[in-house]
Length: 263
Image (cartoon, rainbow, N blue to C red):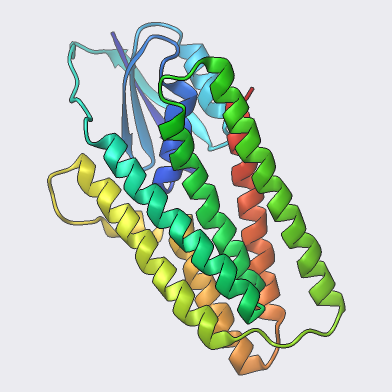
């Protein structure tokens, strides 16, 4: 058996781990995948087909490259029996905040909150794909991935159109207090998801700070909070629209990665 270590420079949250799992598991005679998100490392235990594994990882556009490959004597791996329950937990948290942020974003006229809700939905989609694709045929997995990817792109495009409309027209200022409060709650929810996922892989009860502060989700939440502060300080909706645009771009990039699973 071979043990190959990849550096995946853009793997900074658990949803990207699940994208890689869906792309690789059940293929190329892979026996086990070991993820080190804080250090952006992936260790693959496999038979041959190294070139195919490398290509599959690179297809996700997460910056994967081989840094080491050697023979391994390991024959058995830890059974991750609690993984399904954990995925359901983080899926429900992300979907709940998708609903909360989308509703409050529309009511408060905040595009950054609406965009952040789509980012939550994107994460929920990845966890959902991981759950519902288990045991499914390859063709069904591809269909599910394409459906989720195109749906996210459609929502993001609608968001882009609305951002442009608001840039060009006069709109009432978004409610900055709602932006700050709801995004702060979303930040806590994302931190909880990261904590649960990290704790499941280690008996240590501590969450690594590097994992928190390199996560796109956490950065986005902080960005919306800052946008809310600037909306109030500058008496302008432009900070909200700028952050919203950035998040829509991130959501679109994530959607294209999901579509890669359908190829």
